[in-house]
Length: 329
Image 1 (cartoon, helix red, strand yellow):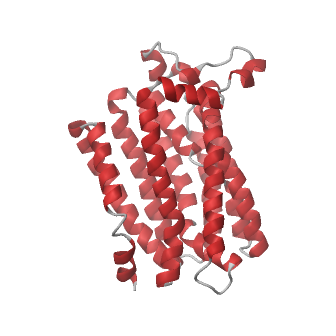
Image 2 (cartoon, one colour):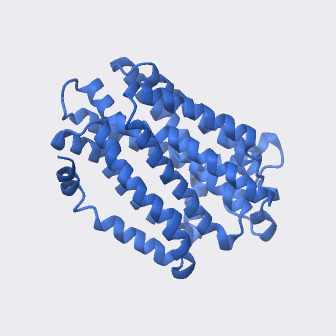
């Protein structure tokens, strides 16, 4: 019962953190264009810089994420959650102060560097926390609930942005990020690997789970790029899952980085219209993850659900821009 109650604090932590980060997404396109190409709705430089930022963040995450995961096995999920949630506040504070050209460049550089270490780390540490405390037979449903909570925060964050000015949106986002950090530190109980359900139920030693016995052996025993490559070679299931995740992420990031600029250039979208569009997408995602996934996954299985998700993800690519533009014209 204590672990189940602990998950409620994890859900609230994820909700507050995602709420803070998602509510500024609709405004980023306008801020970027205003800083790089003032008075214009089209700006190739903005697209190039956004793409370069995503590439740098992705390469940095590839190296850093296994390191963070290994350290969380040693020091606990809560300790490692503290770092990305703390550093993630800084870019929001910068744009909360001002959104002029030089403040934007400061935000851009700081966001790129920090995101190399923090992008996605809160989400995967939260999932690791769930895996520590939930039996294997129930994890997929709980993962779906976790993703649904993130989608719900996406909806509420964008809905809030709809009624706030750009400056107020960043000020509220920075405040919510601080609240999420304080809430996590005060209420979320620690989850250590040696006390987890996973550790109790298995004797298997994973390549990336070898904890050092002495402090000075820490960096020597942390996973290297060679360790990650070796893991991909030795585990066919992991390598296949990683391949699917890689290509899905490439598609999602590519579409996300360019779609807003396309809508801005072709249909002159602003912050409020971006927010409306994201609210619709977030509501659909919340219904799917909070209602459909927990019900259908036990019936159909993980593989079929993954196939269905990938199919619908591919089906809407060709038809997405045109109806979106027409509906908001």
